[in-house]
Image (cartoon, rainbow, N blue to C red; front, side, top):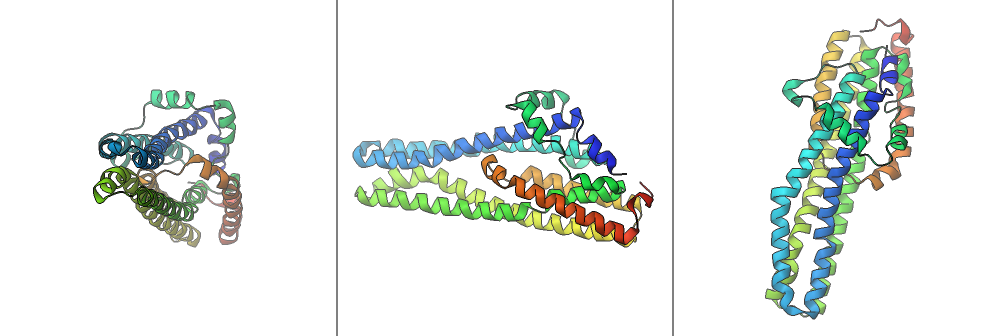
Length: 311
């Protein structure tokens, strides 16, 4: 029965894994934060400085060029590495809690225990955070057979992501447009020549433009992937209720869906915690209510869940 999900997800080992993935994602978000600080406020500061101290235009251009190179060669690869590590840790959590085999071909080797323990120990206010990580998946699934409860949990991983990412992509474009407008206004006020505008405004602005456009594009692509994942999870749920597939076939399909979920986590751009935390409570409430509805659907389709042969 899926009761094993609700028990296993709250064990110390699994909570440590959730803490580790949260800390690894936090490190990646810190890098993203520094990228934004160095490329957004710094550009406006350079533009203001050049208005009063014209000879700084060369240094402003150098700043933009160096930051662009650092972003491509160091900051972005570092951030991607942390995201992949976090996704692997979360995959290990899912495989244990949802009772799925680890896919060496798709995911690679399991993360080292030392990586998990070290990252979890570095999570600020660890004990308080561990309490927040309890009941990661809705408790309503405990009355379902494991092959059905697993699908409900996988669907919970997919359903809300698309809307949030589309909104975030729009915010990024609006912020980028406002920043470019401010820089252009400062250039006009300062009476910049074309040469000064290129050196003091456009070149320093390039890291911010690249970062903003890249993140907006990546969030829209992630939203499209999330839509496909949600559709796949719903198709799998309907297949499970139709009795046209065996428990083993459903488990295989769940593993395929999990591969796609892992790939989505590994490649999706990050959303700052302060945005996620503002929406978390409402999303969790909706997730739990949706899980109850799905359980009721399973009861109507198959009779009482505890009479279904567990896998």
